[in-house]
Amino acid sequence: MKSFEVNFDGLVGPTHNYGGLSFGNVASQSNSQQASNPKEAALQGLEKMKALMDMGFVQGVLAPQERPDVSALRRLGFSGSDAHVIQQAAKEAMPLLVASCSASSMWVANAATVSPSADTQDGRVHFTAANLNCKFHRSIEHPTTSRVLSAMFADQQHFAHHAALPAVAQFGDEGAANHTRFCRDYGEAGVEFFVFGRSAFDSRYPAPQQYPARQTLEASQAVARLHGLSEAGVVFAQQNPAVIDQGVFHNDVIAVGNGELLFHHQDAFLNTDQMLAELHAKLRARGGNFQSISVPRDQVAVEDAVRSYLFNSQLLSRADGSMLLIVPEECRANPRVWQYLQGLTAAGGPIREIKVFDLKQSMQNGGGPACLRLRVALKETELAAVNPGVIMTPALYDTLTQWVNTHYRDALRESDLADPQLLLECRTALDELTQILKLGAVYPFQIN
Image (cartoon, rainbow, N blue to C red; front, side, top):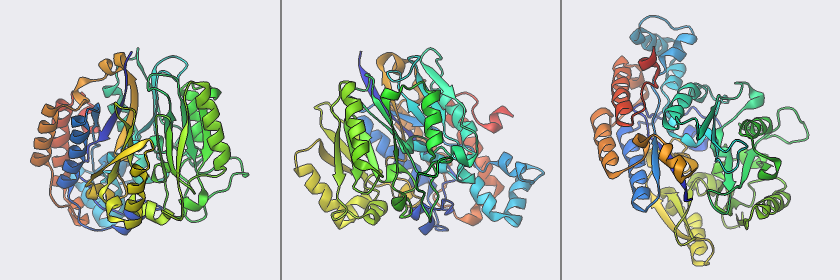
């Protein structure tokens, strides 16, 4: 039976803005308060989706969230009509309004952790929505994320959905940004690779000193249990605390994996040799041949990796068995990174081609190509069970492009977030989007 890795890209929401909300994310903080362009951001994302579809990859779409999140503001003590809540928050607590308007759900690598049916005990694809409890503006996402994923993957014969882990620091879970999977074929049993930044209960694991480690070992272990993964098919690895303190807030900022290959920076992990040996042994037991490419620090410094988002790239398998690396324009703009990439493709290894995309609007807020997509490995029968409305086609691309051009603003500043009209614009757009994507009622304003 044929199998696929489908990339479901997050559609950038109408309130895309540079709030500088993510402590530990260098790009997010350094571009705080700049004017954003929601329309351009959404169109840049759609262009990447269409390009991958045109290359023959199966491509999907994951809907954005309702923003501002008025219900979250009400839970914080603001009252009255929706318009009054927004105006009161703008007057008394502007940072809370900015947080409630965040379009960070566009980075759907954080939406959930996904385990394919070949790995799970019950033979279904498992989804656990990420609690994202390290940051308030992201911690409010998972209820809608769960509803959207359930509407996309509704067939209970093939798909199982788990609620987010307890919203406490000990179980901080950032989803697929700290998870990847190695396999010989997407439809065969593989090895799931969970990367954590700290342990909540075991002091033997070192922790970063400047920035928070958002993923805990305990959260990763809990997701593995929920998904029914066997010990033989799981590897847990700790991220290097020193690179977290240099702005590597998720593993997908310093490493990316696909198929049998891990592409990572030399300083990405602790106990690297032991970790690689475990990955090699466990994948070999499942018929695979694990490979790794370690990028030396003397060729690409961690600072260069963070600024260019070299590793926040998409590593895709092509029909001829070689791999394609999708990188942001910032990689080409960095001389050291670009020189390394030219040598990488010329070396004749598994990565044979680099494609560059302009994702400046997302990049300025701290998210590159890998942040924008949630990978879901599906067998042919499972793909047939996915809601067809969310699978990219030329017609859907045209419809969504027109939808963005109709509903999105081309400039958004912090002061604009206080305009109650923005909420009405967002709700109108999302109500139409649920019909386009055939999602049904998934947003609070449609349910309440």
